[in-house]
Image (cartoon, rainbow, N blue to C red; front, side, top):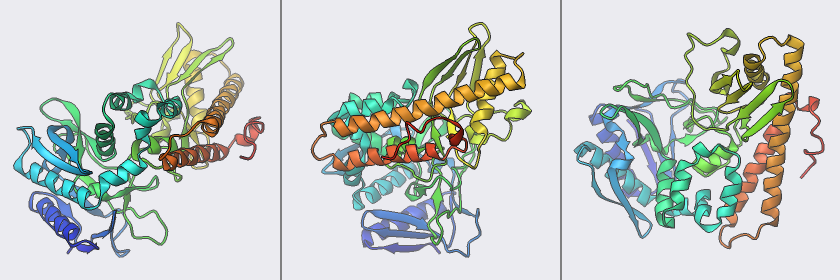
Length: 406
C-alpha cells in the first residue's frame, strides 16, 4: 500500500484520492511507493528493498492531461480551473482539479514566482537576452511569447512549461504538451532514467526506480538531456550533475576547407540506428543532426556537446564526421589537424561567452528584489565554466588565459 508522509492532512487526502483515480483507471503505482510532503517540498521515494529499474508508476494515455485544453487562471497566488475543451474526459478534469489543488496547498505558484529566472523577461530583459545568446533562436519561441504576456500570465506559462511532456495526439497527428499526474512530483537528476514514453499512440508513460543519490531513497527521473543553462531556463535550477556543456552557437571558417556551423538547439534527436554509419554508433545523446553542403563546403550541427570523461572523444568524433562530409579526400592526419583547430575554437568561444556574461552581470545595475535570480545565473555560469574545465583534452588547448581563477 502506498505510504503518505504528509505534514498537511489536506495534502495527504488529495494525494490519496489522486492515486486512487490513477489505479482505478488503468494506471499502476508500486505498492511500496512513499509520497513525502513537508511544507512546499514533495518527494517520491521507495524503500531500498525495491529493485533498481523496477516499474514504480505507469500512466496510460487517458491519464495524461493536455495542458492547453484546460482554461486555468491565477487568483491570489492560486490556480483556478475555469473550464476545459469539450474533448477532455471527466476523469481528466478530475485529475487536473486534484493536481491544481496540490499545487495550491503547497504554494507552488508563489514558490515559482520567487525562483523563476524567466520573470526577468519582464523585470530585466537585457539579462535574459544575454543568456539567450547561448542558444539557437529557434529554441526561444516560448520565451518570445512570454514577453508579450503580462507578468502573471508569463509566470503561469513558465510554471507549466517545467511540468509537461510532449505526447503524440492521435487526432491531429501532432504532439501536445501534457501534465503527468503524480509523476510531476518526481524531481530531476541527470544520472536518473529518462522518461519512457513510446511514440506509438497507445504507449504508456513508464517510470522506473532510479535513486542516483548515495544514501537516499528518493526517486528521480531525467527530464531531458540538459546542461546547467538548459536546466536553469527550463526548470529554474542550474544542474551541477550534468556531464556536458551544450556549446553556444557559432560559425567557424577553416581556410581552404569550409565552414562548420553549430546551432545550439535543444530538441532531442532520434537517429535510425539501422542506417547510422558505424563510426557514429554509440554516441547516444551526444549525436546531433548533421547536414552538409558540398557546394558551399559547409556542414551544420544541430548542437554540439562539450563532454567529460564519460564520453571523452565524442566531440572530436562528431567534428571529424562533419569534416569528412565536406572534405572526403582529406588524409587522417589532415582531418586530425582540422578537428584540433575546430576543437580549440569551440572551447575558446564557449569560455569567452560565459566570461563575458559574468562580466556583464558584475557591471549591471540589478533590479531590486531579484537577488535570488541573479545568484542562480551566477551559479549557472560557474557550473558551465567548471564543466568546460573537465573536458578531457583541455590541457592540449591553449586557454589558460581564459581560465584564470575567478
